[in-house]
Image (cartoon, rainbow, N blue to C red):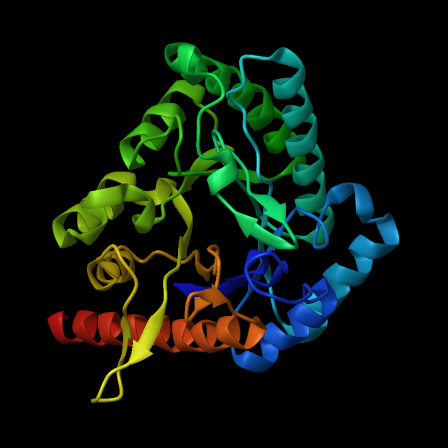
Length: 310
């Protein structure tokens, strides 16, 4: 298991301050000890319409120079809209992101079934503006809009040599079992899973559920993320302090036991607040550094336990 940084953390919408430009972020990630980087395909980072052929070559060359793999290219897509114009625009967007992944040498395009988006006001992002479902009367049909879209996109991804990894993130998808059902329905070798345990809601704190995700997904799991906020305990170990509780230790244990060789990528994807006020980039830096130490700690512990069992 490798540990990477998801660029959405430094997109400039979760904290007071500017985004870190993508090349600078790659250098920062390498200096901080991250083992790979995932590109969010939203401005000002890796929006495909902004990246020329030369830009793509420069990013790919820099990744090679730094020995920092681009682990995934990740569009924020909604393939479930009942409005054909919306859905077809999203299919075009994901196709461009698949081509971007190919050009950057990234093996994975991580996607959503239905992403409601993040609206920004005064430079800060919020989920509040997009929380309500604009099409509640289409609940039953949206699953099939997603299936049709994924079947089309999987064929294109296969032609480009890219794996589509569907995240177990709502809406439409309710948990990891829905991702597995969609994989079965789409039936493509280019369509696999990105399982993030925080997306499992109340079940996320259950060690048994964490192990079940890994066991039932098996080799279909090619990508994952983690998030939250952290603190250093009195014994020097890092622990998760944000709610709800997440069984990261059991999840990582199960991944190590299963010989998972994909990435576990860190994302700070919520408003940074300190003392009831929006915080600056230093707040995100603090939690990003703690997050890296936290996940390395869990990986080391899991590998040690596996060795002791042998």
